[in-house]
Image: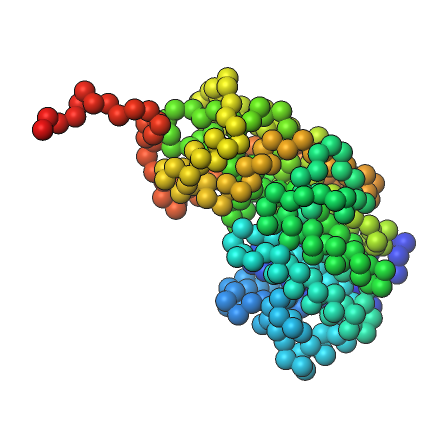
Length: 379
């Protein structure tokens, strides 16, 4: 089933349905909202822990989506035999939006199990039309230079477990693409909505840069590295809009899409803009990646930057992602990744509002400075 077929394409069969995974992730929530608003018939796979929240979110809507309690990492998606067979009869399209996360203890196993189970399900479906698969542009690992959408296994090494997990799972999907129609979406690091900055959680290189520049330390921190590398980010609303649009375009079948800013700004320029908004000035010198990692382990910074510390290498990575497929198929739709400068204020405002609600430490002096012994008590 194609949720938004083109005018010159046949409409979807009335009995067809989609399956959406990945809730409560931000992208899954947004695709569920689009499917509900479009009155698309479908099913949403919800883990037991999130089931009640999802049910409340859809209460009172005119949605034609049915919630099913299950998990993509489990055999037969954690469903009963009857439920699984019913899905295999009805589902023609899957949005598999399970994204790599720092919160998962064994990301490689988790991603691979989810991918295998979804591929098995697609193969069991009676009339399957497409798997819309969420990957990551960071399947490129430590590669530098220009990286094309049709490239995957180039013998690259990986800088963290999330990159390796995303690569391994996408490789499984690529292998199966000869038998199962697939569209693969590789967003860069997700940041908040371009209109209001909203996002479910802060992680990735942009939020590392934001917390680095606006840390509670009163002394401005030097950049980790020289800051010349591009910082790849994309607002979550653009990525959701792009996936929904491309899922309705049959030309997207069998292709991979980099959902990225085609003209990314350098890390230094982004940090300079963040610093200007915070009335700070970046030091003219920089730190090595190793020194920056040590600094982020200080208790005062570790509290804020723990999830993002693994993204440190992204701040100095000279990789450039082409998006030819994306630009071609989105041309004329009005969907395009906006420049970061157009929504930087929204990101920063939402970030500060969330920090205030969740509690924030007062600014402190430089923890690396020697203690002031002149005011110490006499023994």
